[in-house]
Image (tube, rainbow, N blue to C red):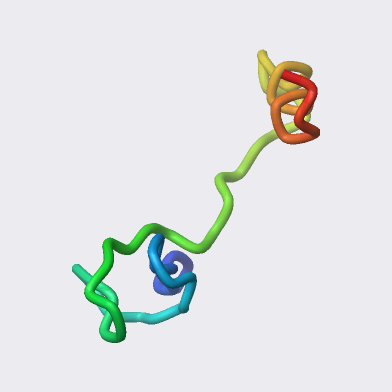
Length: 54
């Protein structure tokens, strides 16, 4: 069951609820990073972005 865990963008707490954070009421986003293949067309740009070079 991937993708059940959510993270609040305001307080940073994790929850499995949908909609809003049960603690502060802030918006939730997925706590899981997107899958990236090493054969991806723009892998060099993605790697630079994650390292903070651009």
